[in-house]
Length: 632
Image (cartoon, rainbow, N blue to C red):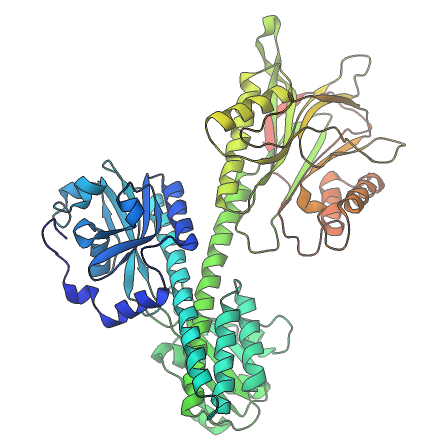
């Protein structure tokens, strides 16, 4: 690209496959909600003023996703290629990362520099299922930028997710085309129509799957009704580069051979491995062919399933096959041209679903590891037992905003100065609005800000710390909303030396549960308004209660008590009964008991529990700064 010419050959941009894929996305110079989301995520995660989802056409680039671009470009959502650095990503088929675009020979003459203010640039390829580069997910800085490896990995991950979304849109458009073709020929080929309907169902149903086990179940349900195989399996190529294949095992136990042969080498004598290795459909017409051409283990597995014939279809990947879809019949089954095309199309839909499930699986694992790493190790306290438990949602949300915290604060010394000896234990639990990476990130900020507020306002109560946090939340435009409880616990002076005093403020959070010896569990109902930027209301108030020996207190987030088929009141009452009835259990075991019996089997929200107990027999009481591992 240059200000007066074009460095990228026109033939690259006008490649028929690429142009067709761009058209099939259905995207152009108009705002698209999904693409806008990717642009916002790129801008927030990398911290740049401008981020674009740019699709490069033969004479222009268009921005269906855009953050931070100024007019007139923001209004038109497009530029000519004289203003495009993204065309180099298309031409080279790889990321373009520039500290300063003015110093690179490919881009120094680009009009994007003076007109759009592009200086630092990092663009990641956006590809379709056939490997065509359609454009770029790019982060732009108006100053020279040294991109970190972490920033580039985040951009690459986002580009992979954005590419998956583009592929799904292309598949959806292809589904619409397939529907039209099938409807036109329905009068002549009823069987072809039935199979086209299978493909339509595959495109629609598989586009909603997010887990590998779910992908296999959907494929099995789809093909069983039409092609009537007695066995449907999926085997994936290990993406670690070790040359292995991994079978998706049916946990119902209907195919024991899947456990016996769960993994095997890509170059082994299995027809499924051969299909992936050679990237072509492999058919097995009888046992004699299997014995002649394949390994004894494959023959054993074939017979254990009671098969007479099978077909192994490669799952197409961007570079190499992702694995193999295998269908088996207990009688001879001839694969004609129409059925072969059907299976190839089904394998394509399955491959896209597998890619998406693998991406979600990897991101969920990484995000949950990140969130769990942010959870607090509990301090050791003489005279108080502490335990906590965090459980992620059963749904496929990446992360959530549920959290807890516990840390010692300095006591008051002479003249109001901090004493070096800890004298107060701060306790917090909360639920930040959202179930995504932003919610988890905000959760970390809230924890840190509350800690800082406690230290900056030493000697003040928890309401003062929450008020200070809310002030920063509003005026620094952090954007945190949700609920929380913040509390201070300290030993009572004589004559109640065995007891502890709890002071707390509740910002719209579910009520803590308290049990004391000889009394039923009860709720601490006192609460104020929830946390919301700019929301005005009465000043935060504090509540105090004395915790005698033998008492226990439970803080929890609403995922514990939100259940289908029952009310929150019933769930809270059940929790109080368990807290009272299992007072002899060690506190970590008690939290596991509550977690096993109260929430729904597949909770749709994360759950955090934080509990404290005042032992009936009190040792000397000091709050230690040393930490012990949090119960998980």
